Image (cartoon, rainbow, N blue to C red):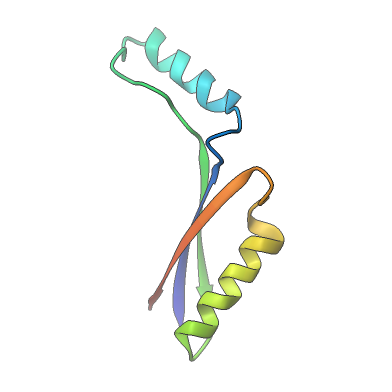
Length: 82
């Protein structure tokens, strides 16, 4: 059994209006030291597999097919033993 931690973020070349809104809100609350804000997604998956390499390949497939829009998003993941 493995735990996959997946991080999905917009590519640097893609505008992030949600990040801009958070940045503006933080500035209006007096947190002027905050620079650029980028919003992303964080997911934890339990993977029932006996082999870590196979689990990693399955998570990569999941990211490519569903969890990330690879046209505008980047992803990375870690797979660890539970």
